[in-house]
Length: 85
Image (cartoon, rainbow, N blue to C red; front, side, top):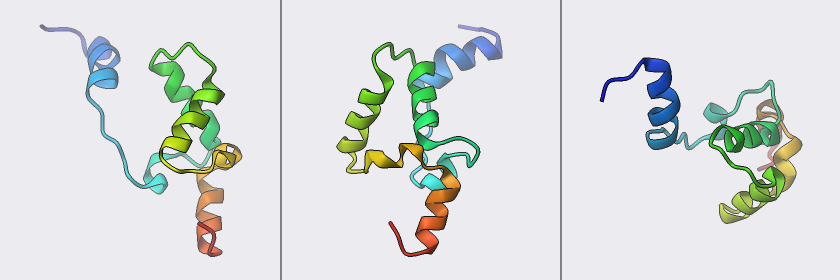
């Protein structure tokens, strides 16, 4: 099946093929909050439910504190340098 790159990227690459970065330092941009970036990911993948409740559910599954939604990548780095996890 041959399709233009933008369509391939939208239909196949972003839904069927992906890379999961393990470190938050390489996964999040410092410009937006973590909550914004997670909600955007859900929206781009067609999630139609309440994004905040789904994000809380996902965070609990991986044992992360949902209070980090309002943090940015940079504040996470600053917390780490101060000895916070």
